[in-house]
Amino acid sequence: MKILTAAQLAEADQATLKSQNISSTDLMERVSTLVFNKIHERLNGAPVPVKIFCGIGNNGGDGLAIARHMIQHGYHVTTYVTNCSKKRSKDFLVNYDKVKEVTKDWPILLDCEEDIPEISPKDIVIDAIFGIGLNRPVKGWMASLFNRTNDSGAFTVSIDMPSGLFSDTAQPADSAVIQADHTFTFNSPKLSFFLEDTGNYTGTFEVLNIGLDPTFIHQADPAAMLITRESAQNIYRPRKKFSHKGDYGHVLVMAGSKGKIGAAVLASTAAINSGAGKVTAYVPSCGNDILQSSVPEVMTIADSGVDQLNDFKTELEKYILCVGPGIGTSDEVVSAFAKAIKLQSSPVLIDADGINILAANIELLKDVPAKSILTPHDGELERLLGGWDSSMERLDKAREFSMQHDVILVLKGAHSITVYKDHMYINDSGNAGMATAGSGDVLSGIISSFMAQSYDPLMAAVFGAYIHGASGDIAAQTYAHEGLRAGIISNFVGPAILQLFRQENK
Ligand SMILES: NC(=O)C1=CN([C@@H]2O[C@H](COP(=O)(O)OP(=O)(O)OC[C@H]3O[C@@H](n4cnc5c(N)ncnc54)[C@H](OP(=O)(O)O)[C@@H]3O)[C@@H](O)[C@H]2O)[C@@H](O)CC1
Ligand SMILES: Nc1ncnc2c1ncn2[C@@H]1O[C@H](COP(=O)(O)OP(=O)(O)O)[C@@H](O)[C@H]1O
Ligand SMILES: [K+]
Image 1 (cartoon, rainbow, N blue to C red):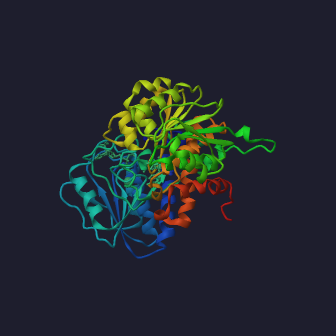
Image 2 (image 1 turned 60 degrees about the horizontal axis):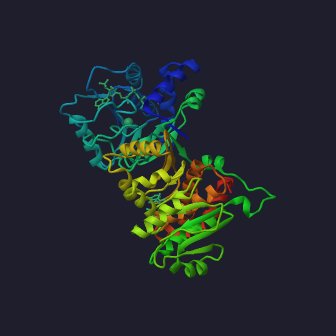
Image 3 (image 1 turned 90 degrees about the vertical axis):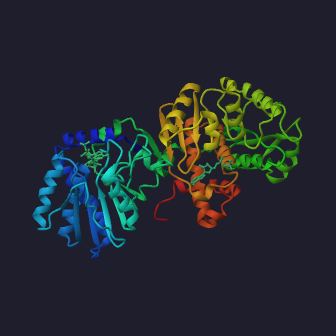
């Protein structure tokens, strides 16, 4: 699914009016009817007090139209207008007049200086103050209104966006935002819904298809792609009947050190569980027997280093290198890492200490083949890029780094984001149970396995992140979030691939 910017959505709006030969008032009616139907389905006529707060732009116009539908259906509605300026939009005014056709209780105009209405925990608040037209931080009286709403305990439903939330630019620290319990958003979710510092404001969210012009949407270059089950289905490549293990590649997992051989076990098990034809673990010699007894399908090469890697020697000719989990960062390890990287001509996967080594020895980046994949968590990313003030800045810096070094970054988190130059792919699978030691090692194994199976590296990263999250989601149905361990996630790769094509109703 495409995630479009506020500017693109405004353009899509105009393209729709033209291609469907409708007025903006018609489109607002379509949108507000959709939202009303959703609310009505849930409230089913319940006599709860509903307070609808409307701004004076088109988000407020949506709010007024929703108010009209609710009043017509007998709901107990009080409508407020945050009447802070005279620049009311045309469709706000049209819908302001239309409310008067269904009730004598005209919308209450708030003067934006003193009167903040009482909001009780028993109220339902509909927030239609600002949508994608927000253009500056929310302060002063409006911020007090937002804080009153947020502190009220009332169930709050936001229209299109929680008011005060910016859709695709950095959220100013001093701007008030409505904390919604649920958000109905139009056409596509907004980028800020997926970022750590802003993603909680929406509560749960639901995307309503408001019938925007499909040609415009098809042609639009998105701010990011949301990777859902459907997107993953399209990336998946089925195996061929007359194929053999040589067709599915060989992953060489260079990982582990004394006390962290588990990282090598987890990454190589995940690689074999995800379909690689062959997997070999390249480990310090203390790890050799551990690997051999814990996962018989995985071959091993013991390095000359006993407790940690100190060299890189292999007779293998063709393989995908997955390097970094649990290797440490001592001088010996750095030289083994540097030697291994220098020998590679096709893209590699670098994780964990591999990233820490690169961050501390940035000159090694020149030996990293183009389109290699780095999978940092935020600690590693900070070492690599320096810090950031907002999630948007984090993305900007990642894009710049990717462009400069021609590498793919998988920024791990609740919604892992794969960044390659100007392109971003936001993962929509996974759960908080996956915040557990070794979960990232499993991801490295999964992604490198798809690289070995000849997925293009960018698609291997995007698909691998999706399958990793989906494995965690299926596993959590049996183990709960708390019971998830990295090794369990890895065992659910098969069910996650099966689920891609399972019929919904089975
Ligand atoms: N294609 C679509 O997606 C469709 C979108 N639709 C709907 O339209 C919505 C977008 O409407 P919109 O463009 O009129 O902007 P909106 O969000 O109402 O805000 C503008 C108002 O806010 C004000 N303002 C801004 N920041 C402020 C601040 N910090 N503090 C104070 N004021 C501030 C700004 O004031 P000004 O800058 O002019 O002084 C102006 O008055 C969209 O979210 C969706 O609900 C559907 O109806 C149809 C299809
Ligand atoms: N709250 C969360 N929701 C979804 N996925 C998560 C969450 N927390 C962590 N993950 C996923 O779990 C993995 C953790 O990786 P990482 O921090 O490198 O673990 P480790 O270093 O222990 O292997 C990443 O793929 C990340 O996206
Ligand atoms: K809103």
